[in-house]
Image 1 (cartoon, rainbow over the protein chains, first blue to last red):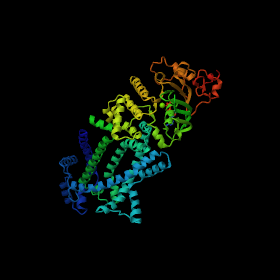
Image 2: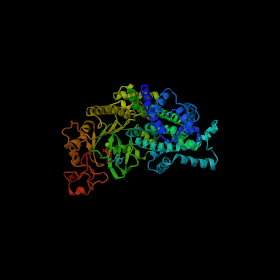
Image 3: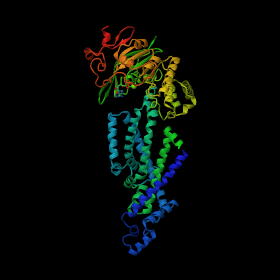
Image 4: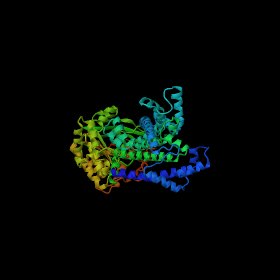
Length: 315
Length: 321
Ligand SMILES: Nc1ncnc2c1ncn2[C@@H]1O[C@H](COP(=O)(O)OP(=O)(O)O)[C@@H](O)[C@H]1O
Ligand SMILES: [Mg+2]
């Protein structure tokens, strides 16, 4: 098991190199001059040239990439072009906010998605099932920001129940400010998880070992929880893990709509101002988080599915 | 001998997209205490449907018990509530399913899977149930230390032993074994059957043994029922059916077996194919394959008649005698 975890951690290195490579080149080759953005439109040509030299922008691109990687391996992600603050510190400061939102979002998704999926599967082709499937189809298809704006209009503007902007300080204000963004973020995932749970349950319901469980005289409740759920959970865990990873990184739109001070917004702002070190820093951070979430999912797997545990033990 | 199970005119249909599958069309049978009834027929004849029907485990939808009665120990099973039926399943009537590879829950230890049924039907502590589960494992020839292993750590034959342990853990009066050895290696088949038979005798369990294999019937059963397209075509004790074969289908089955001892499996004994259960022929359902077919066979369904001492045959040729 430990050997397996170590192997997986080492495998993150090429992934991170690949991610930085792609992002670095996209940023470097896209139009716009970081020096001009830092100094503003009024700056003289000499000042711009000096700034470019200072930032190392005049070196060939491969050398710049090489330098960046070497710094990164030393744990130095550089400083922001815009305000000269340390990139790592900025990212680290935003990280808890994004995590809070992602956890709240995934909780919303689980609370809605798993029970709906189970009921849908057990009542396949009934009215309940059809309604749930249509609603979840809408949920999957509906753009996040649109739903975000909708809940803001209803719950903030019309009813005035909840704040629509920013992150509250203190427990109660925090929770209040969390409701709408978490709902927005969670519904899309809830729809995905509903569909996943339903199909996974339908697969399990047909299995012979469910007939065996019935033939033992077990009650329907025990059959559902002990026999169906535990087997159906295996693919659902993957789906939830991927969704959580996506929520960590993909909250950009939601964070923008609700002015949530998270990583997603940091990244959007830094892309707009072509703050290359900050963009790279956030992307690397998110890539690491994504890989770690995936690793955790795989470890949870081993606890749910004894067949996988045996596999890990072998190698 | 006291009658333990009595099935009367059982009709079970499945409503599918391709039409109504008439899987079981008026089957009657009876099993006495301690007795073994063999149920023989081709794939698709309705054997599993009958077995699941007795357990009231027909998936609904698509399946439905349309007509008939099932009496167990005098109780009308079809009239029981869900909770009462749960007490019957696993406690009074157990079932072994066709494929041992897929019949155990892959994420539970085999010990837990045996304990589960013991705890359901006996009011005992977890510790006692664990103890009992270990004893059951030993009974089927597996060391009790393996109770903590998972199904994927067992071979097919070992899995079937575990399933037998589950089925017999609560000392049921009736065991329904649905082709318990078909999915196993030929070398293990005999062992497993021998074990079922030994335990059944020891515990005085009655058995409905479903099989493709007439050799298995000869060695294990007291009575035989031959089923074709959801109907019983011949029924009687071993002597009657084996030595005084009457129905052309049974005859065909025997014709394909060189000797009783030979291990013959999943063969197509009679020329032609089973009729499509969504579109059964009129008259005798076997007439499309029968070498003695007459005009009357295509019109009327022959009744199941007693040709002497309970030997039942569904064929016009017996009617005339
Ligand atoms: N769940 C089901 N849905 C629809 N048709 C079924 C179902 N189970 C069995 N059948 C049909 O009922 C007929 C009898 O099947 P079965 O009882 O499994 O036969 P056997 O066990 O003798 O091979 C077959 O035609 C089969 O296709
Ligand atoms: Mg079958």
